[in-house]
Image (cartoon, rainbow, N blue to C red; front, side, top):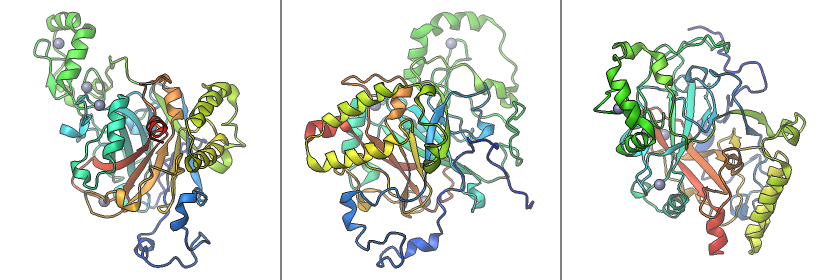
Length: 424
Ligand SMILES: [Zn+2]
Ligand SMILES: [Zn+2]
Ligand SMILES: [Zn+2]
Ligand SMILES: [Zn+2]
């Protein structure tokens, strides 16, 4: 095998999240022992967790959103990190199916929130590795999700927020083993599954019985498409000749236009170390899509919702840390022992509340967290019933285990402001 180093980056500041979580598995085994020469000087660090002062000492990669530079910038063969729009499935064939694609509360197909490309280069099986986050846009479902996340038997819990981990070795049937050139000439080695004509997200296993062209993930999306114009379109397209039968090799068929206009706008997520972000101008609001005053207003109104001391203090330090790079939408932790930056001291999971990996039974660790700033870029209104969260923390299998399940479901914990404001 070649010694050549595969360059995931593209030689610019948007070099993606990689060589992350520099952890050896041996380190994890001493978990029960008292920490000796730990990077934290305080032996009682676990117990003093409530203070929230030990958080975030390790380097953090911040994610920022940018409009994609080219029409092809977010194609799956470029291994992008994406917020909004439709996912760029890493394994484009063996997509999540069945119940996994739906909100367990309202039954609607989940909407794509974001994906993070986070390869772990120390293992062959994780040469490519992407985490996908999906959410039901209904706030009442997210409230139920928050309630259910406390349940001790995760297999029985319902979710409106789901995370999938997919990984591929360097040599695989979908992509070249050589790094992409990023000049618009890259192509995947083979086409993926045909996706739903409405959401462009999930597998389109159901077909319109009239035109035999439109494909759907669900009855709900077939109905939505029919009402929004397929009714007319369908009659026209059924008289046109069928497209060539070689759809299996037709990569362009995969990139069909998606008609659902309720998808969030699509951005590329670029990353930068937290310590560098201040100097490099990601906190300059001239370039910003959200004005400083807009951001200040919303942060102030959130702060007003806290009356109780503990949460107010935690919120203040959360806000202070975020305000150094106010446009960040994601915080990616490179160390397995990292702790997320919690907006609230209450409503945090203990180690017991984070279920073990459903594939290998090993522990899960915090890998990244999503900030509510993303909702501003998505244009989600700040109304009473609108989708909102204080943070979403994603926990993944520490071993990033391999399994026959291609899209392994991981665990997400959500903290909600609206909920705490009403229960405090
Ligand atoms: Zn729902
Ligand atoms: Zn669909
Ligand atoms: Zn049709
Ligand atoms: Zn595992």
